[in-house]
Length: 577
Image (cartoon, rainbow, N blue to C red; front, side, top):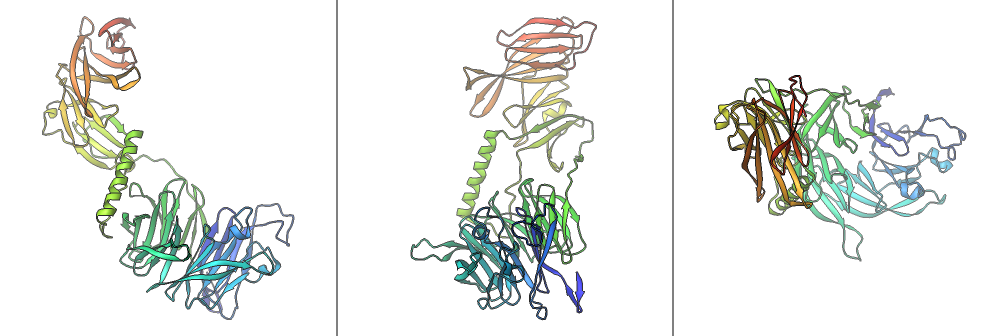
């Protein structure tokens, strides 16, 4: 930011191409400045340079006019660089309604000081936005004359290096269109009424023009930024109403929305495909990192005390931001810090993480897709009634403490989601001594100091008591499953439990229409002096139980009896197996 002849010179727009390390800025004095690596076959000033430094080039207009450069985009790389498809041209739009193409790689001597193509006399106002569709080789522009123009390659110029463009179609709107983007087979246009319009190629073979397919009001005020995230098939929009919203690109159905907690406008956003996070900057110079799936703000920091109007993720740990006076690259270091979940009033005695299996995850994704399809077909959600459709409820943490409460925690934020009620039930008679997950389900098993065992359904917080076998504290619970003839439908499932009373209990598990029924089978008192049983484990054929006297019992599961006793001696407590 500097003064020239009492005029404050500021950066108005910025674009970066990571593939060829090209950075371009446009200023309000009409100058375009770019930084790029040297190319020995194109730069006459240093043909044999081998260093990795960037060189700076500057393009300008009439210094007396000082026409502000309002927008930039990288274009036509597939035409001017058919081999690599990376070293393209720069398209600029300015306040004098002109669109110009510049060659930062200097394929021809004339391109060092002048544009290679000028489109003048078409638009009737300031150029607001430029975007390029490589699939259709079209340059799309919008202006304050309320029009959107589609430009196609007509021919190459006399040098044979640069294409000449002609206007193929004019789309007239009733207000300004500040945002353009292409996705799949559509052109998306967002205007100052907060409406998003989708245009698609006509199906008629005689017509090659775009026709409006659908439109949807997304924001109360004008849309000032739009980002298409191809990996998730989402559209991210920012508006003058200080909100950020995420929509499904196929139906424009709202998925997630948030108002800026800084009480200012969001200005730009980019999606980090490596970390699957959305990076957003605003008028206060704040950078916010969002996890869209959990609708969670992961991190926020003020990078500059000035508006940041551009952000681009360069890698998983590097991000480029631009303000009116500088372009900066920031390195992000991710430090693992513990997050404290507060809520228990007693000692935590057990933790269980329940995650989604591949089958349940596929089923959940299919169910989400069916729900979204039915919502789009039946009725559309209003703009201000965004539902929580992407929150990941599959992976959660359960904890139990000596206060006899079971709590459910968000695995990322460590916020308590819910608490399973144990106060007004039979399970509250005695404190919980152990808690484990029932494999293959989202159910919990708890053992109590009075010898009771309960099965908890975490979906509705209900519980069911098993046959009361133990007379003292339950010290261990083990689930056993064996497939018969490699058939999952004909597998044998059992539940083993051990207690302070020296009793080893066996339950058969019967599956009826996805419901598991527990039948007590037998109880075995291990040892002659009823020593406490402290540890348990099992394999395909045997179950092993360790007691406080240093003995390990080998229980044959199929025969249903203890076949071997291993004595460690010395009255050593077998606390783990």
